[in-house]
Image 1 (cartoon, rainbow, N blue to C red):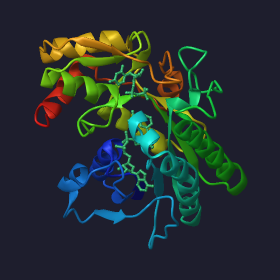
Image 2 (spheres, rainbow, N blue to C red; image 1 turned 90 degrees about the vertical axis):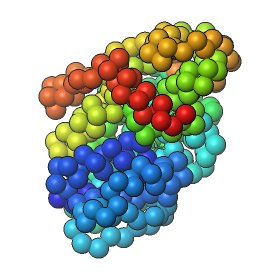
Image 3 (cartoon, rainbow, N blue to C red; image 1 turned 45 degrees about the vertical axis):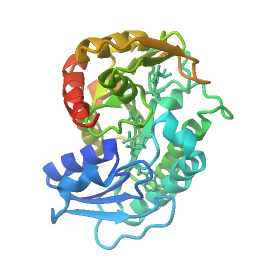
Image 4 (cartoon, helix red, strand yellow; image 1 turned 180 degrees about the horizontal axis):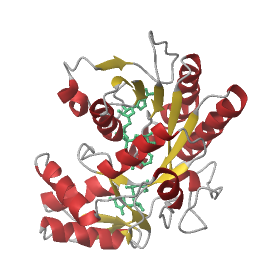
Length: 309
Ligand code: NAD
Ligand code: UDP
């Protein structure tokens, strides 16, 4: 199989490249390194089954030869990154999805969209099931990301319904692990960096908002199963183990042995108050569920970050 992945030099994309190659696929990685890093894929250089194309995924793309799968993962993904690059985020979610779908259509390939729990916005139902339509502020400070991904889902379904493209949509919930950027602004790299440097951990609001963190190998396994399944409707992939951000700060302090204090900062606008995936669909449809608990995943991630701080 030959699989093209946009955003393949990013945190998740690079782990997916590893998994696809391990499954025997040829991999074409398309990335413009706006938030990804050459270091994430440096170990794959020289592998004859791996090719990198430096390209803006929002611009037209033509590929020679067969392509069996197109995975559209290009997009800034951390709130700090997507607010900084708001127009690029909207373009890669809209134009980029259109380009990637066109490529899949031309090659009769399976298409998989990296969507997000952010399509549920600040959710009014908990845990979030795939049939929930969401609660999103279309003009809010996260809208460049949320609405781009909602448009991307609509475009994906239109290509499926109108052109018969074999499409799939994965709604990814907060994921962590090695190769996250220490400066990407997400809660885990922030807290770990702060704890290891002895700086205060910056908890936004009172820290009563919740998240549910999935270790990257579990996520990649669920995504690979969905890619191979041929299923068309959105599927949540994430770990349902929910924790408040305040508790998460304490967990990081305990695991790092850090004496850092907690510092409370203003809550960013439209920050979802709660988030937890209902993974019944992934369990029944794909036979998938996460295997790595948070303590084990955090210990592996800490080893990676210790070498970076
Ligand atoms: P990341 O920033 O590490 O990776 C994104 C990659 O896409 C980077 O390599 C970046 O350079 C590339 N990219 C962005 N815009 C591009 C463009 N126009 N052209 C070419 N390349 C471009 O982020 P990530 O955490 O690995 O996220 C990957 C995907 O998964 C994103 O689509 C994101 O929305 C989705 N997602 C991630 C999470 C998570 O917890 N990590 C949660 C939900 C959804
Ligand atoms: N957060 C925090 N301190 C930080 C970074 C983030 O308290 O230094 C909070 C943030 O307000 C949110 C949660 O942690 O409620 C997760 O934030 P992140 O940016 O990782 O991703 P999100 O789930 O919001 O996309």
